[in-house]
Image 1 (spheres, rainbow, N blue to C red):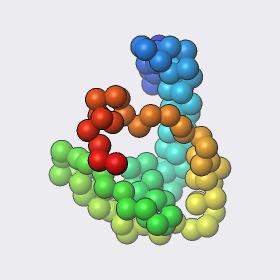
Image 2 (cartoon, helix red, strand yellow; image 1 turned 180 degrees about the vertical axis):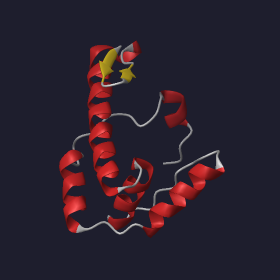
Image 3 (cartoon, rainbow, N blue to C red; image 1 turned 135 degrees about the horizontal axis):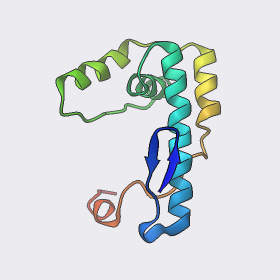
Amino acid sequence: MHRRGDRAVRGGGRRGRQGQREAVQVVSLADGVATLAAEQGVTPAQLVPAWLVGRGALPIPGTRKAANARANAAAGDLTLDAQVVERLEEIVPPDAVAGAQGNDAYLANLDT
């Protein structure tokens, strides 16, 4: 387990040290996004969907709490200026996150 700020990062398991490095990298990216979101007066859960919509994607976040659903919906009202988009793309460049997006059981059930 690694510590990054006040977050504990668990890595390893069958992915070993590579998994640990990826976990630390993802936390670092998330910290950068969280900092930018705070500067904009929104949450990362609002900033990222607004960024994705601006890039032509349609994010569908899942939630079990009404308050989170309202926060997710508020992302639709955000308009990100070019400087914020540029900073996001610096924080999370296209090649920053790679690897499987789920475990083998999850991936086996996806339609391709």
